[in-house]
Image (cartoon, rainbow, N blue to C red; front, side, top):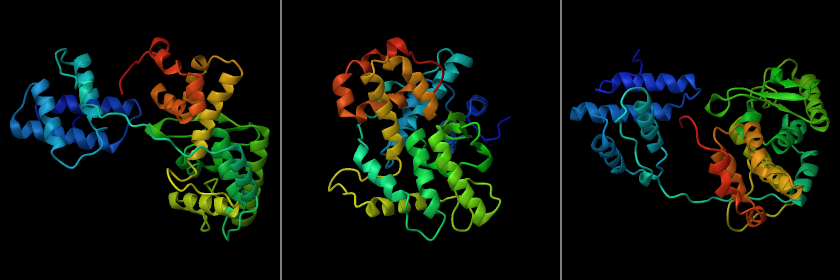
Length: 317
C-alpha cells in the first residue's frame, strides 16, 4: 500500500522499498523526504526509466540548492540497489564519484587525569536538582558502556537490571536494541542513584530525571557536564573542539582498541563485538574510532587496509 503518496512511475517500487527499510528497522523521515522529492521530480518530467539520466538528473537538480551535506545521496543509491535486486536488473546505482570527500573530525580526547578529576568533582556536584546525586551515575554509564548521550537520557527504570548486572538499550539509533553487561562497581553506582531518586521522587519511569520528575532533556546534559568540568578546574582548549559528554563514548571505543592492541589481542577479530556493543549499524562506524587516537593509528596503520578482506560489505545501507 502506497501510504507515502508517491505518484511517479516508480511509486509502487518506492512504497515497497520504504516498507522494506522499515521492516529492517529504518524509520528515518529524512529518507522518505528525499524519496518524495525524487518522486515529484520524476512525475513532473514524466520519467519512466530508472537510468543514469533520471537519477543523476535529479541529483544535479538537488545540488542547485544550498546543500552542503551529501548524505542524502545514499538514499537514492540504496534504492537503486534495491531496484536492481527486486525489480529491474538494469536499474542505475548512483556512482560513488558523487560521494563527498571524507574529512576526518577529531573529537576531544579525554586524558586519564581529566577523567579522574571529572568524576571526583561529579561525586560532589553542586546542583539544586537530581543532578546532585545522579550526575556521577549518568556519566559513569556513558564512560563505562560507551553510551550515546540520548541512550543514557532515554534509559527507563525497567531497563536497568541491577541484580543481573545489565541494561537494555531499546530502539536506539535506527531502532536497534541491545543488552549490555555492567560491572559490579557500575551497578553499585546506579543502585545508589536509584535509591536517592526513589526516596525523593517515589515511583518513576525514567531512570534519570529532571527536577520535575520528567526525563532528562538534551540541553541539561551539556549544562551539567560543563558545570562539573569547571568545578573540577579542568582547562578548556583554546582551539579545536571543546570537551563534551559524548567524548566519553569516543574514549570508551578507542581505549578498548588500544588495550586490545597492547595486550596482543587480534583487533580485527574483536571489532564485530565492539560494533555490536556500541550499537553500530556497520563496521565503518566502528573504524571511525581508529583514527581518533594518533598513537593507535601509528602502531596499527595496516588495520584499515585489511578490513574489506576480513569484513566484506553485505546487505543494504
